[in-house]
Amino acid sequence: MHTENIEKMSGHWLLAKIGKKVLRPGGLSLTKKMLSMLNITSADDIVEFAPGLGFTAHMTLEKKPASYIGIDAEQNAVDYLNREFGGTSAQFKLGNAAESSLPEQSASKVYGEAMLSMHADHRKAEIIQEAYRILQPQGYYAIHELALRPDDLDSNVKLHIQKELALAIKVNARPLTVSEWTTLLEKGGFKVLKVETAPMHLLEPQRIIDDEGVSGAVKIAKNILLNPSIRKRVFQMKKIFKKHEKNMCAVVIIAKKE
Ligand SMILES: C[S@@+](CC[C@H](N)C(=O)[O-])C[C@H]1O[C@@H](n2cnc3c(N)ncnc32)[C@H](O)[C@@H]1O
Image (cartoon, rainbow, N blue to C red; front, side, top):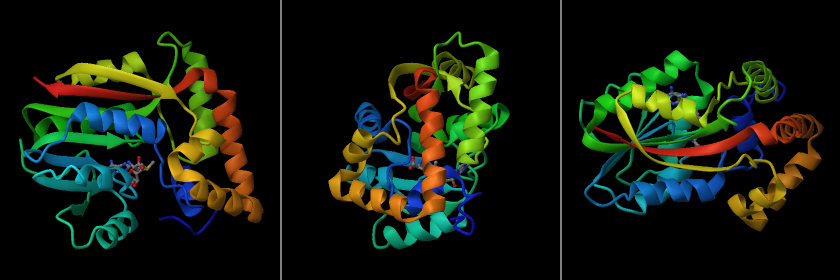
């Protein structure tokens, strides 16, 4: 993880550094909805794109799928995951979700959270194509991402939000509107089955308590208060999330390979 410089560190690793485990926009509640809609059983071969710290991987493995493979682009994340999940059947591989090198039609369900939003539109489409390639026919693909709203949001406002977000989280985030997300999946050959949204409250106190528990929230608050450079970054992110709250949300989409 990039921990060398607080100023330049990407928002998700900065939040991970201070103890935040839930790093996706809709929080634990939307992740639970996604998993419940995916209905993972012992018959499933699961692939997760960008497991990060493995928060959702833990929940998936509780469902005892036939197999689980996580593909993450960061060596440090993969090393951490291999330590954290040592002794389980889970496999974690270093790789790019756009070219996972997994065999064609080898997964029954694929999901990824807070990762497509970090990529340019052509790369989003490549990752969706890769999900399609590795899925069996009738397989399911779920995404949990950052979205802009309403669907007819003025393109200048969209660009402005994307620019401010990128500056605050130090990641070139490119969220889409809910209808743009569904169109992208449909263009990739998927049939969209369900769409759920939630407010983008990643750094709101109540969401932090809901996601991390009271003791987790206290630890995060202490880390923020005791470190001025971290405090500055976190407050800046929170300010931008709050400023654009009305035009941002989290979205989960469940799609099927037809
Ligand atoms: C914001 S975190 C999200 C992690 C996790 N999904 C979660 O919701 O907590 C971003 C993670 O996505 C991974 N990532 C981003 N783009 C990727 C790609 N194209 N292929 C694989 N992993 C990717 C990064 O390495 C990082 O671990």
